[in-house]
Image (cartoon, rainbow, N blue to C red):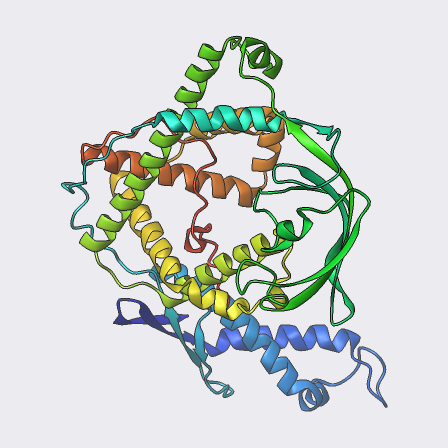
Length: 452
């Protein structure tokens, strides 16, 4: 087999592959021998059909099958021999099969660019410090108290007022037909909380327990299901009960009831919240610094990006967004932003992700940054601690080759970014909670799976 490689540009290579006739002849003869064993044609016993008859009847099919197999095998071999690493399926130009002559085909492939790392350090960053406001601690304390509030019946009054929690049965119709998901029983609604469709709480205020009421509201243009945006909906409401939320006092007894280990006083709880919020803010600043560093690296080390990788990343990000929308109770098929629109909106982010992944991989190769078994073991322990699983469960999950490779690439990305932060005298803060960043689509294991 002979192969020549032409460098078209930074992202494309053209492979011309010549398969010798003797190789073709051997494969064709082997295929006819197998066919002869099972071919059954009128006038011939099974296994006794002459070669000439088989060739006349099945020649085109046999030629196509043999060529497809030889092209696939020779293409894979040509990639390895010439160290060509495609990122998408090849564009094939097939030759003509002529008896006694070599068979030639041409494969044009898109490849990863060769990245010249020009600048990895010396970047300047705007001064930023973590400043925790006292209001943040107070907000967390109020959130804890609010989460443990209890509802008690309103006594001596039957008319709904602001601050009450109204217990409602309601159903919604549009043009006389039920609105999907628009019926609830014993639904608690805090009046004045701003959690209902504009106008709904105002309509309930002043109602009396046991009263039925009907009213119409025009849904806002945004923030609701697309099929209801701007639509007039009629509500049928019954006020079944009124309750008041009783929030516990912030004292040492409340703190002890929380069951926080090592925390038994209000002062200790405040200190723990302050530490947690500070760590969270430091982790966020660390992520922002890394994003800023990546942007500077991309700007300082330009290179062309393979369109196939960008599109693959767009697909992955659009699918992820569709999953998120589905989890929010929205049907992606009914959204004005269909898959192609979502994919288009992801173009800029997808290109940045691909550039970042390729750059960091190039840095890892040059700086010889790898992920050891010890690194993976430590990751397993940390992931188990964060998720509440035991290490054996996490290890079983990572035994799957795809999951293990994903974790390895994520850890390598973290190690590379740590290294680059140090080069720029930006020592990383304590590691942020959460799993390593999921690699971009192009960082998937090199399987040379872009088959011919």
